[in-house]
Image 1 (tube, rainbow, N blue to C red):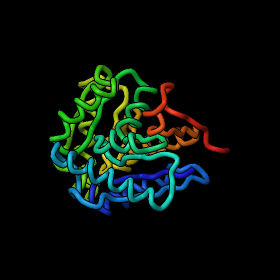
Image 2 (image 1 turned 120 degrees about the vertical axis):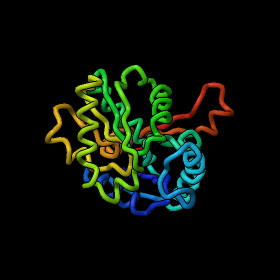
Image 3 (image 1 turned 60 degrees about the horizontal axis):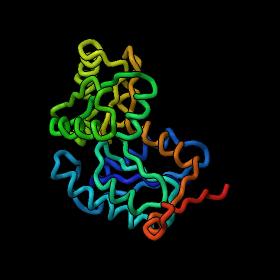
Image 4 (image 1 turned 90 degrees about the vertical axis):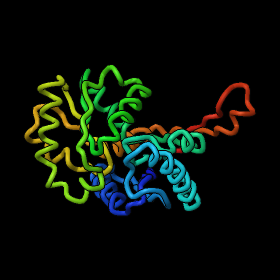
Length: 240
């Protein structure tokens, strides 16, 4: 099983964090390859950043394919920069951290909240959850004022503030689970889980597990062939 993890940020420190946390969730025999955006911003924080990062993520994907093929692609962002373009180009499933975390949260509870980093993400995430069909199930979205790159650089300094946000999600918003979302927050849910009364879902851990589940289904297709075929996409199962 070959999993391609794309960091749409230019920070190699974030790539290293994604790999470090992602590898703890790998099944035996699974291979994780990570690539970093070749241009753009160190860490996505605004809509403008997302636009640039989408082009960079597609470029990183195309460069990765020159070396080998993959069974699944995980876009290492809690947003969806370049997702539509990469899915159009890919012959295997492509998912984001938000796709995975929401699917996991929806499987364990009816209503869940989200905590992340960067206040500019609040309206972006609301729109994203609505587009994914989870809008009515999201009890609340909270964000630390600093960016995810700042959290990744000094996670110990924000643990208390994150714990307070999570408590607010449960006591004030009625959440039965909380997603800790964002590449820069990878690993923090594990540290806060012992003192939390509801499940905490790490978006990176969820992303790697969800991607592997999709890869095990061995879904493949040829989108270009579908354009010239009245019966739709030509599908095939990868050999066992």
